[in-house]
Image 1 (cartoon, one colour):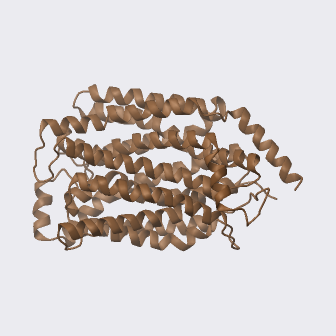
Image 2 (tube, rainbow, N blue to C red; image 1 turned 60 degrees about the vertical axis):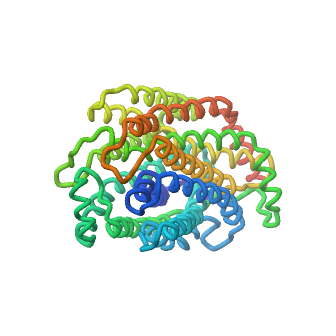
Length: 474
């Protein structure tokens, strides 16, 4: 068996998360603003909706993983889902960012239904995609490189979203929006347009790109690793029992949840923070980007540097130690962020440093989940890549769900009112906490969680060697 992963495959695998990330960043950084200032529901209602929809959908991920582990086609177990759900993924995104002409109750019902369906489709394509990492190569170091490619392209996708979304929404809003929407846009020149048709068509344009990327990911990747025991009759109950008795899995899910909560709160409040606290009315010439978009772009560029360096640094110091140093740095710098002057230079400097540290974290997390797949296979003689990687998706969604819900609830608690131009000092104080101190608390939780993680570099190498010996004797 040829276990060498080609450069084309690495790029193809990266395309998958590039597509997912392009939509995920819209959900993570713009959806709360969309629902409060464009769609027309309260921050508290939107926050509750995020929590309800994503929490139950997070557990749906486990069932997608179970189904993917039992899927058998000529394309493999996991790749077919990229083909089957590439178009529904983008279509559902457009429907989610459509504003119907309903009353308050009708809008809320529409939001719950469409947002929940979007999360379901996201699971059906993203869980099998994540599971590919565990079957493209048996080599832990090569999986670490694949994880780095994945996260690098994810941040490139995020970068593209930040570059395109605001100009697209503004352009479509001005071209096809109502006269009233144009007046609102002119009054809020430094902010993204609130034209409903602008948002729908802007998301549709990005959706077309996502569909193409998923198709390329399907065509350019291969599944190589075969399980030691390929018993189709292994019960779901036994797979779940094995998973719930896997101590490293519990620790990694908790640690990943805290790390993603850190990102979700910081990102979700940023657009409010800049509009209400920073209040710099500036757009970059020839691009249409406001300062919030610049902030996001700077963060993504720094994230990307961290992602690229992650396999290099972790190969020398180990994944666990690299993760702990990076998350501690992100937490300490987040505390400093609260005390800096209200100056765009200081804000962008801290954003760069925090994002650089955060960039190390996610590729290491995904690579560690692949290590847990091997660890559980050695212990149980059953390879459940889909189930275990679905749990990583579950922690991601729970982190963003709790982060989005907390952002909405805290905004409501600090009396955020979308109908007034100048928010109160109390509201602005809450926004400042959400972009600095609250994320720092999440970093502390993630740091201590990783301290307890038992799969050292030495242990992972031992597990890999034992599994290879089993496969050779199969």
